[in-house]
Length: 388
Ligand code: COS
Image 1 (cartoon, rainbow, N blue to C red):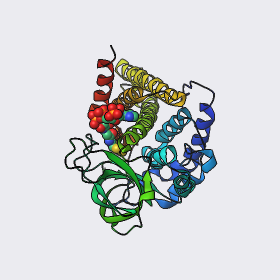
Image 2 (image 1 turned 135 degrees about the horizontal axis):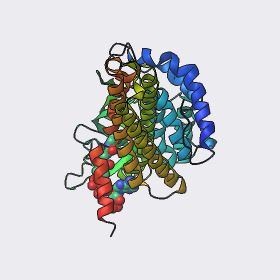
Image 3 (image 1 turned 180 degrees about the vertical axis):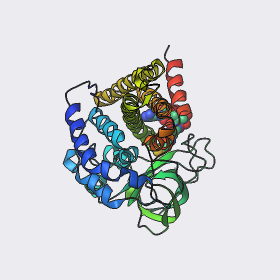
Image 4 (image 1 turned 60 degrees about the vertical axis):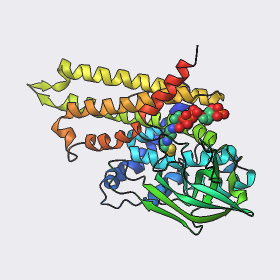
């Protein structure tokens, strides 16, 4: 394993912890999990193992059973998990992303109900924002809650929801009241238990990569929840969602760094061992340049990821830095996996010989989920254009 750059002393213990878990647990199962036939099923025993190791509750508050880590430590954990296996990092990140609005904006009662069990892996949360026509345009929500006495009656459909098929509860973003007159509906967040009548999850099939962490669709058909399930204030849901996504984007950036690191290490090992023209291909300048470009981009992505995490830890607004880190690190993962595959050539393209083919499929979504690269550019461009 190559030595990693740390910006402070809190990171190395996290790397060592994940490395031990990776060697002991992830390395045994990650190929098998990727190659299971459809339909994908959440590997519940494995999920529990990850939770028991403290990885799922790591960013949740200590007083509610979590690890109370900093954003920098969280990014380091996700990076190292993604080095071992992208889907395992995603299985770990999704519950933390989905729990964040609960412990950040929820009441004491709501936090107590959900967070300790989510941290232990006993309740699986989902962050239900995206709809068929509300992906990049996240505010364009159709799902609607209507007030009826002390309850909300919710109807709608959510789409591309990580763990939406298997969740025990969802942080559901929707309009309250029809708001037909409004140009932009005011979005709210409501906590919905998955065993409420009318709530149905479904697994999306034939996903390209990141298979062990399942993606779903949620149908809401006259789902009745008490008004006490409202999270925070009516109409503040969009800001809660955007705030949550800022942190989630640091996590995706960290996944990019981890996958890029793995691609680089696989390339170096291969280049030093593969003999062509009578010597290891590492002796060829064409290969050396690829390694140089991969490692340079990787280190830049790493520095940007830690910068965004450190800003989050300081309590500063970090939306732009998170978008920059996510954009650059996800594109870097794509670049490094592609170059590593080129170095491996046929040994990269065919999964019998290396994990490059799997890395290729796993990394592709980094430029899509938690806001596409185009959305990140829109956020970044907007900030700079408003800055003078
Ligand atoms: N944190 C806190 N508040 C934020 C915010 C953030 N990161 N981003 C925006 N807001 C606030 C704005 O300040 C604004 O508030 P006011 O109305 O009080 O001024 C409000 O939210 C609306 O912001 P904006 O006008 O910028 O929203 P837009 O609808 O134009 O779009 C984008 C914003 C495109 C950036 C947003 O819709 C987005 O991120 N889309 C991608 C969603 C996504 O990542 N989906 C992936 C899957 S979800 S798991």
